[in-house]
Image (tube, rainbow, N blue to C red; front, side, top):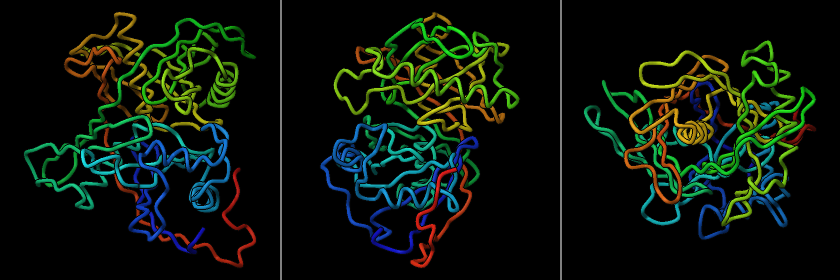
Amino acid sequence: MSSTEVRTTDYHTAGEPFRIVDLAAAGLPPVPGDTVAERRATLLGPGGDGTAPRPGPLDGLRRLLVQEPRGHAGMYGGFVVPPDDDGAHLGVLFWHKDGYSTACGHGTMALGTWAVDTGLVVAPEDGRDVEVRIDVPSGRVTATVHRAGGRTTGVTFRNVPARVTGLRIPVTTGLGPVEVDLAHAGACYASVAARDLGLGVDRTDLPALLAVGREIRAALAGHPATRHPHDPLLSGVYGVILHEELPDTPAGPRQRNVTVFADGQIDRSPCGSGTSTRIALLADEGRLKEGDTLTHDSLVGTVFTGRIAPGGDTPQGLVTTVTGIAHRTGEHLFTLDPYDTLGSGFPL
């Protein structure tokens, strides 16, 4: 790190944390690259592939903010950087305990709220939605911030197109064989019904869900259906969604899920980008059509709602929207004491 202090603003979206660092405001040097995707490649370091980051610039800062005692294994965040062009308000480089991700729906919702809270994007007190355009490594996304009574009441995330890339792929796990579906929506997610593994999506089964999620991700490493057709840095399974059915609502299906992503990180929210892939898979099954709503519950009882965007069936894939709410949890000035023998901390 080039500084012993760094200021952050923290949010949570449906229970999942998001720690924001505005690199320019913090006086930190810009990350080399002409686009957000190129800047992510820089952060991965020489030879980085997105799953095993090398020591690139700012990696010490990432570790400081995500590792204990300042963070924890479930911490998530982003470095605010310039957008690709003036068509967007900002760019972001997403990070977690294992490196730098290509997409993050809950983070996009938090950033939209932050942009309005800080005045980066001016919003009226009432009566009008505010669109915040954000460049992420997988493309341009939009957070539409809903306002009423002088406050933010919700955020709708419009994702890059989602594509189903594999169905009923057999995977052998310690709990027995299972069939897995794959879809890309800024990142690649594997979906599996928890009941097919003899599990429920609840806190009692969380250790088993975590273990089998890691197993499935490892088993699919290198599978052709996980490859992105244009960018190898967008390839590979990022998350495993273990889901179960709940009674349908009048608007459409309802499911509960737990998403295991990166190397064994649990999403506390229903997972924004993962919800996009569930919409694509349900549409492929004929269970969700334009005008229907997927109600998507998390392990902690929070909810996202997901829909096919009007006219969203495109040659590039299915354009989806996911709605939730983000709240600010605090502002922090973190310090790295040069005499602290733990340095940037430790993972546990």
